[in-house]
Length: 254
Ligand SMILES: Nc1ncnc2c1ncn2[C@@H]1O[C@H](COP(=O)(O)OP(=O)(O)O)[C@@H](O)[C@H]1O
Ligand SMILES: [Mg+2]
Image (cartoon, rainbow, N blue to C red; front, side, top):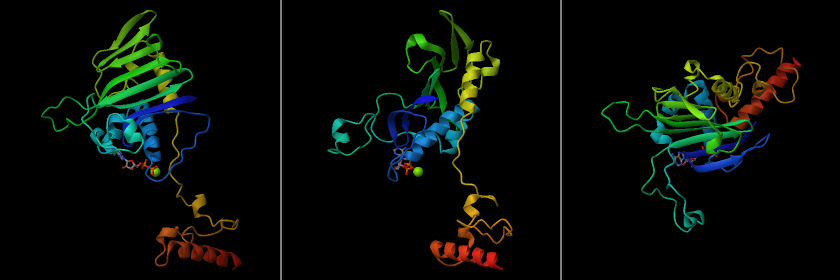
């Protein structure tokens, strides 16, 4: 089970570490960042599917996903005494994502490459990845450490280099097949791959949203007659939905 989720420098999230329970409900007004948190979790899942860099490209590129506010929120900003505005950034710009679980934890940091003449110079790079045992990071609990192209794993008291030329768009989970001591990484990858995201409403013919509420007698209808609310011409949505329901009920009486 996930115990903590951490996100830094992603859209409206400057730095966030949230403890998780068995069931977590995120609420807040529009624009408060609920979807951004959800998207961050999805991005984290993409690392184990080999698609984090692609997913960032689909979002408009890493640069557009960086938090645009100041590096640190001062007390006066938090109190609303001064506006939250971007300031000159001192550290390297990194999107950081991570989670802590009971058995192991994982974190990834992505950044932009050194400026070049390439047309793809805005493609993000994976700068750092770590897997450590248990929920709390200590240098002694580090199991696998990726620094740029180099991936090392702890073997007893020593470190063994697993890969030296990892492509900067590949997560260490993508490389797992080529490691000699890959069992631990493999297990961690499978754990993340089991995450599921149910964030789309069903819209197929049998979807609950197409069934009139409270009417059990819909199974004999032609699906063409149970039209989605938004496809009916004229009338407001509310009128349309009433019309649609009464039509279904009228059909039912025939
Ligand atoms: N790169 C960014 N830096 C700072 N804020 C951002 C960035 N991208 C989006 N936002 C802010 O995120 C907010 C939208 O968050 P969102 O997760 O969609 O809200 P919710 O789902 O709670 O309605 C908007 O206020 C938008 O200005
Ligand atoms: Mg939203």
